Length: 86
Image (tube, rainbow, N blue to C red; front, side, top):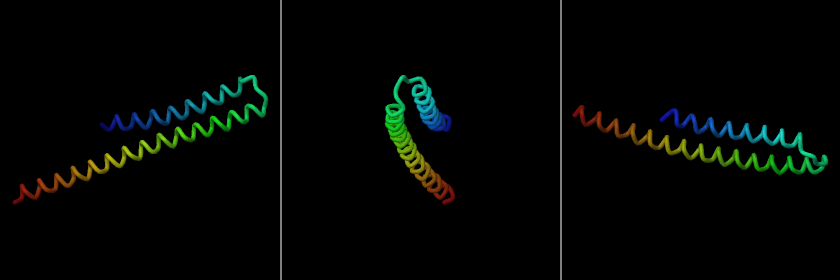
């Protein structure tokens, strides 16, 4: 399960890096004026920020779920230990 969690965050980081590199290459070879290129860069940067924000929000939600599950499991384990000692 740990590998699944690490793979998800790795995918998100890879996605963001790939997006940025793709945008940079695309802009360098685009046959547009400087003004058009700057506007396109502004739009794509905004989109990349929104995508990154979405990925971070999903990761935070997953972390909250994992923490809640860990707390529940710890409580359950403590209760079982108390019962066994009794």
